[in-house]
Length: 89
Image 1 (cartoon, rainbow, N blue to C red):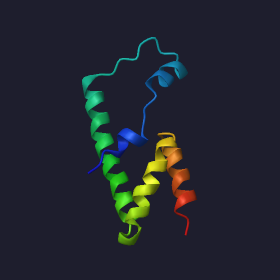
Image 2: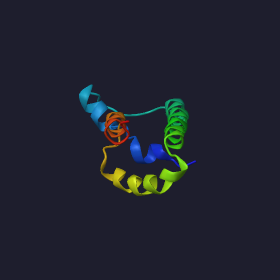
Image 3: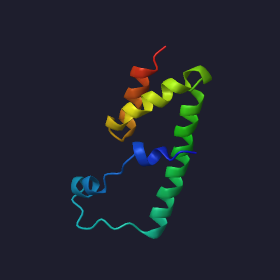
Image 4: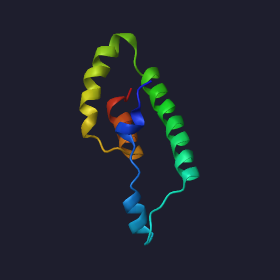
């Protein structure tokens, strides 16, 4: 299973600290473990999404299209916009 969360999701810790005017940005080991577990679950959903939308005759198209995805912002809204624009029926 490809790790899609590395390419498409990013947590802006600095932005969170700035938005909430936090003096520190420490994360506990249990919070880190919980985030890791959540990212694994999200990764499975993303891989399942790719699998269900890749039909055998479109596999080559999917490979070429994935090269274009590097320019997309790594967040949930970008994935939604991609889905709406590229996979409309």
